[in-house]
Image 1 (cartoon, helix red, strand yellow):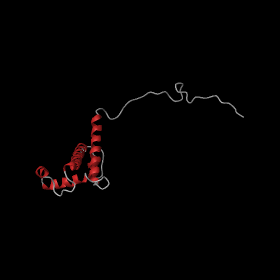
Image 2 (spheres, rainbow, N blue to C red):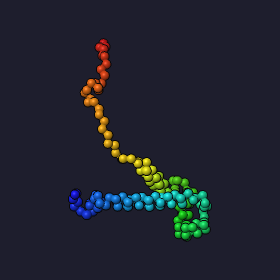
Image 3 (cartoon, one colour):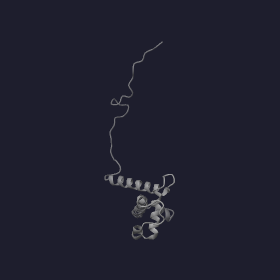
Image 4 (cartoon, rainbow, N blue to C red):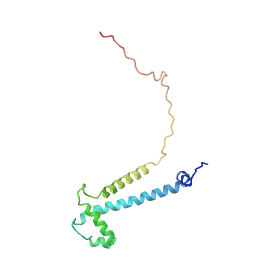
Length: 142
């Protein structure tokens, strides 16, 4: 048994809560992924609005409610802006979706064991099997 001087260290490094910590991290990752995907989806709705329109479309109000429709309109308006003046949050959301998707794909592809436990027998570097660097003939030049 390992001794941890404080309860916080026990909670962070202890094996008892490892599964619960991993589950909580995956829940947070999923929340971030869902939020970033929603931001990207709202930004991609720029083609459904006029950049100068003050109010969200009525179908957005019916679908999302007034406040969420206004937020969606503000994000969608950023789609009409040049990249240099648009909100950096859309680019951050894009990066988060790409990163989490790649990490999930990488994790899904690793079905087998994560470490290789193989022994390879090589001859000693001074043995006849590996004589060393070749020796080339030399000439004296005046």
